[in-house]
Amino acid sequence: MSDTEPGITPAGHTPYSAWIQTDVLHTLQRPVSNHPGEHAWITSVQVSELYWMLIIREIETAQRQLRADDLPQACRTLERIVAHHVPLNATWKSIAWMTPTDLLSILSRAVETYGKDTALQGWTYRQMVYLLGIRQEEHLQHFTPQPARWQQLNQVLSEPSLYDDVLAYLDRAGFAVPAAVRVRDYRQPYVPTTAVEQVWRDIYGNAALSPDLRRLGETLADIAEGFAEWKHLHLMATRRTFGHRAAYFGTEGIAWLRPTLDELPFPELWSARGMIGDPPAACPHMHKRERT
Image (cartoon, rainbow, N blue to C red; front, side, top):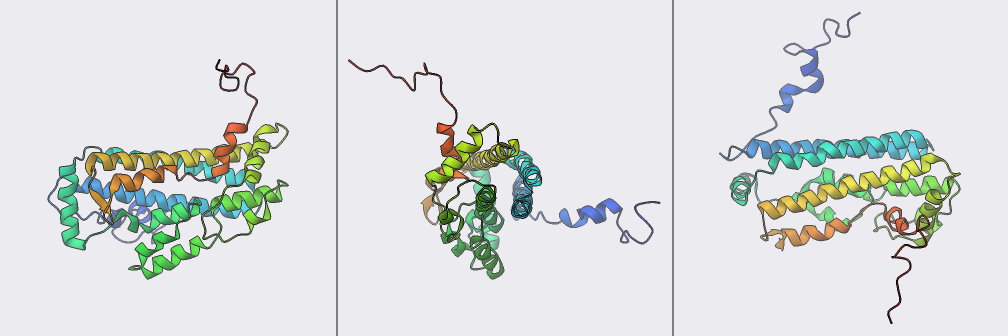
């Protein structure tokens, strides 16, 4: 029997156009300037928005799987996030042609049409960042014009991040994750501990443990790298198209963005790397010649 029985597809549509909503999708790019590249700019940003929402959904799915102690399925879900970062980060290529003149001619018309804005008002990106465990409550102020989104983000800020659920899973699996790490005010920035660092050292240092645990660690590391790469590309695009102009609330855009490169999710997963494995006895970094 056919998958598309008569009457299922709305009039004026094919099954494809009805399912993918192509007629709606291609009405969502509405340039406000005469610049021939504005359509590329809008499309690139909208594609990024779609991928951020996709990553949000994947993180939420992985959290449910971790809470159900289904580590293999959680790893599969998290590996999809790694794959999603590839096309997400590639969106910067679509606007790599932009010069300061190009960008400012587009932004000036956008400001005239909609008012002055800031990229910090992107609620989808902020929700993804909160779920990754980077908790900055002060950014909620940017969403007061959107009360429903403010409430949504406020709720996410009050709940466990992906890393919180990873650590809760590891605790249930028998690793010594301190209670103060597991039961805390999730709205506050996460504070790394040597105890959690030791958990990751044990996972990587004990070959007898399930390989799925190391698969979890490596997948989280891949996610963090993809996230960090996007931020680096954002910084470089800002350098090329905006330079040292004031951007975010009067602060120079580059000066604002540069410190965010240090906002790396899953901190102990990274700090433990310097203590995993036994370096060779002759390693020059371990045995430096004494000065005479």
